[in-house]
Amino acid sequence: METDFTPFASLLGGALIGLSAVVLLATHGRIAGISGIVSRVLPPSVDKAGLPQGVIFVIGLLLAAPLWMLFTGAAPVQVVSNNGPLLVIAGLLVGFGSVMGNGCTSGHGVCGISRGSARSIAATLTFMATAFVTVFVLRHIVGG
Amino acid sequence: MHIFSTLCAGLLFGTGLILSGMANPAKVQNFLDLLGTWDPSLAFVMGGAIMVTMPGFWLVQKRATPLFHDVFHLPTRTDFDARLVVGAATFGVGWGLGSFCPGPALTALPLAATGTLWFVPAMLAGMVAAKYTTTSRPAPRPV
Image 1 (cartoon, helix red, strand yellow):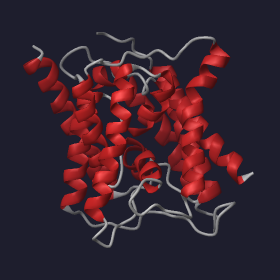
Image 2 (image 1 turned 90 degrees about the horizontal axis):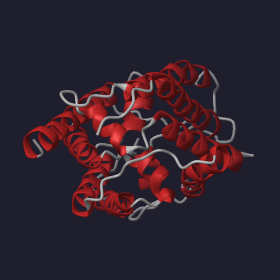
Image 3 (image 1 turned 90 degrees about the vertical axis):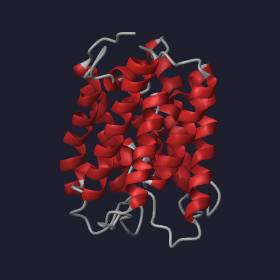
Image 4 (image 1 turned 180 degrees about the vertical axis):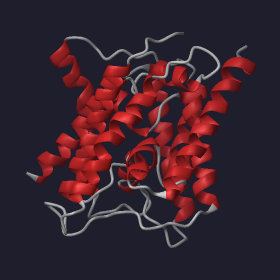
């Protein structure tokens, strides 16, 4: 299914994400890496000192869509696959891989690159590459 | 005030994800489909974010400490190891399959699409599993 090219909305949305990361660093000295924030509040070894802030940040994330609906009167546009088994496998890989690799699109892709971290640049190039290959296989070899 | 700032940061982040299209798996899938129905929009998300974080982080770090905390928690590791590469590669495969990464998946959760309700618990389980594999090591702090 095709989607519209939205450079301005995407640029502005990206800027909001960046602003959030700057706010978090300026106020609490934390990197806005979602996999890190979420995994720190999960067992084992729950980060008790960081627990309240982590939970509050996630509550903010969860409130975004309801507030969006309240202010715009429409649900955010999204098309999600109904393929349950595929999404369970995807979820497991995303959760496991992002914690094993110490970051995801936000921690490595945005914050890490901004800090000039060589680890983050390597991680971002790696996950972009495997994601491109996965979609190629999924859409053009399996689905083709 | 410090609770409010964290809540705002989460809310800003989620709103940014929705506005940018990251919370729409169809858009992510098309961004990753270079040789098909390619939609380059999401490159602008990373561009927009880095345009703010790069100068923003530089300014913030001119302070000795954050506003509401006594120390900056910045990653200090510079070494490359197998976990970084294998973990990132694994994450990329999952991102390609499900078109959700952790932030957008949580942001999309209240919209309660069937696929999201499958994805999020599996993602959390994957995170817990990965933490179990690292707890015996002197675990580096996740980013």
